[in-house]
Amino acid sequence: MSTFPTDAPAAADPAGAPVRLTPVLGVTAAILLTISCITPASSLFIIVPELLATQGSGVVIALVFGLLVSVAVGACYAELGTRTPSSGGEYAMVRHTIGRTLGWLTFVLTAALLVVIPPVIALGTADYLSAVADLDRSVTGAVVMLLATCTAVLDVRANAVVTSCFLALEIVAAAVVAYLGFTHAERPVSTLVNPQALSDGALSPFTLGILMSGLAVAMFVVNGFGTASYLAEEMLQPRRDVARAVFGSLFVAALVIIVPTAAVVVGAGSLEDLGVLTFPEFVEGWAGPGVAAAVSAGIALAILNAVIVMVLQNGRVIYASARDRAWPEPVNAALTRLHPRFNTPVLATLAVAVPGAVLALLVDIEALLGITAVIVAAVYLLLAVGTLAARRAPHSGWKMPLWPVAPVLVIVALTYALSQSAAVDLAITGGVVVVALAYELLYLRPRRATHFLVDARGDR
Image: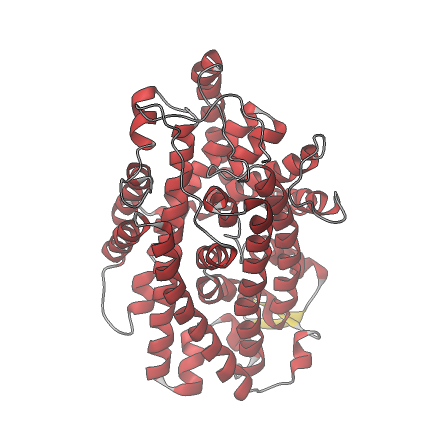
């Protein structure tokens, strides 16, 4: 049996037995859960329109370039995820490759995302159900968060079944858009490779500068494939299946996003419409309001599906931090308690999901989207550096081909993306870093023999 080095044994329950999640997931279930977190239909209907408004008919080229960067990031997740299969995800990977302090910093950065991103996505539910019912946006977002929480505390295999059903519906919605767009084609497919951009609603030449201006958004369209690393501890064969889940989910998500986007470019009444119409409006023009309402309902289900998997994975990160003794002992004991039937970290899940529901109800958290983009880029940069450092010690997990091309590409691309970020977002992220380092210096470092002992489960 292969094992991974750890600083100390995993946290234990009062009886002395190690606190562990149960390995039950095969590669198919892991891929389905990961795709559900990427929620390609949500990306298609919510993020892609932002790209269409600037990239015009060059949007597919922008998406392909963004996908290449995502594949490079995915290679980092796949290699480090097989080396360090832990529910801690990124912070466990960074801790085992480039050190304790940066591992803690990674946890704090990801923890900020855990609370903010799910309710931001949940708030979009009411927008897409407006064709069916007039719902309060904040209340609907909070209800979606609570529904997702109720599902996320169930057995992980039950979640795989639930999210797979929702995933099938959102893929159908994307397929309807693709079919209608291509069957109502107004221009040849060659438009996709001889594109025109949009500037203030008017057509303009598609240049390298325009492509690069959309790269920061395009590279995050398939964001969520890192979920495979959060599930590694519950996979039956993480050394083999983490990489398969990362790249399998990336491939499927790319198809679900890029093909319907191409169809909209080909089928739009005019290229100028790409900057002003939503996907449901395109569908209504092609097939009527009934089909458009059905597609909107599919988008709402996609949002719920994504929030379920996010809450599920986020609870596991909080659980892992407590198992690794990142907090005072009473907190660690509470957050590592597993449900006696489902073997899921109920309190840890509630600890991250309930604040998210409150934020959705009371706070304008969509104003934090710029900050979340900066934090995601910073975490990816830490992973890339960790991947460069990982080869210092041999390991028998999956190894990326052409190393170190992928991590170097990630570092270059995301450094550029960060350079384009708003100064206020960078400053706020810097404040989070300062708080994280202060906690590490004042609380964790004096207790380094007993706290933040990051664990990683070896293959069975």
